[in-house]
Image 1 (cartoon, one colour):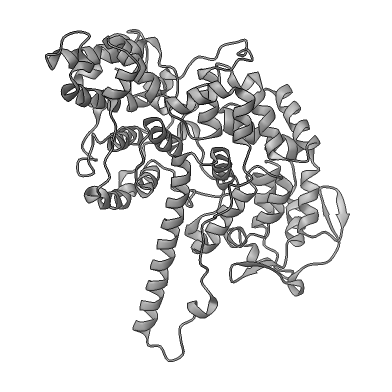
Image 2: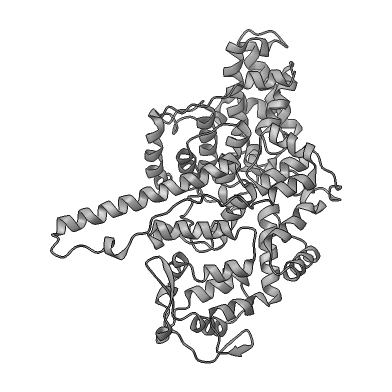
Length: 542
């Protein structure tokens, strides 16, 4: 029997050529929903098909009224943060503890607000790009330690999500959270700090190998005096180096905006950003000729993201077999996607804790590179926990038995999957290191907060299948797989899951073709079936 991680790699569809034709059907609509948003249920997919590609794209890019009511974040003033004169040590500690608690609660409120937007499907492309920029211009609450500044940065990403990379880069260079995270708030003429200048070139705009150490040192001088105070950008002219500098061959009395403009003028910048965007949405590195085409397009359109994405989403290559359903879903994609396909509305905080448990804790990326993504998302432990969290969303797994239940250890399922798979298949090598479960104990304790919540997963699979007028085990299994998976289930998986459903029906004493006629017995069977499906390797792909 293959290992769980190996099964995931085996399940990935084999790339096929030539590229898919310019067609618009359920396959293409679901793919666009998965990549430009966070998945969709059957009704939303069918509506997109009926609208047609151009009308659906027009909806995705219409964001005029999307920012009317942003989340209100309260800043900590210096007066509040400063202990009053004569305050004894115990009072000081209480004041600081209270402020940390308020800050933590504000952060939790905002992250719940953001997660709710993703689950609801409001402005899906804006929220998708907000998540992208959060991983691209990565900063962490661990270092910034100020919810107001992190929230303002996230709102900055949202407001520039589909706009100009130039304007976003200029704004992020002035962003207090970024200034503090990469130490530019202490970058001054007599002791230049190179952290921000280095990451601006290496990770944000050019990529490795397209600059020199001298360029970094000179760019750092250009950003001296760019600091913050009380959560706002502040330019300190006394600490700014106004001497002549040379960056990438351009000489002058350069400041930070000049450096950004110089970087945008590099062919390497166009190529780096085009590659980053294509890889994020397709999950694959573009061929050199295609990358050149998109890099040139990005430059010709003044680095406007909406124009770039509109071109990408109309490109037949975006819908080719090598791309559709061949990307490992990150934790946010996985849990939000399940919620949207199921049509459930779980507490946002529950989903946030789940994504953190799976390795993607929003506002806490592991480093300035953000999250690696791809195969790094999957470990033996995280794959098991994905199945458990899917069970929580289905109402099949409670918080109390969260650590103990794993549907993929069911011996009968192992038997069915073993029969359906190629007997001569060999385990794929994996260089993924298993994660340390001790790291997640705190998050598991937090999950227990939800054991007494009134929320429950109100799903009626029996009614859903009845509306589709399916009766046989095979048709029910195929319909359930189509609703639950973001990809088309391979034939072997369809066979295995049909066999599982048949066995469950027979053990319940229900006659062939009569499963849906017995809702009292049928619903528990279909929920267990759904839990197994969402624990499969194919469920990790989108």
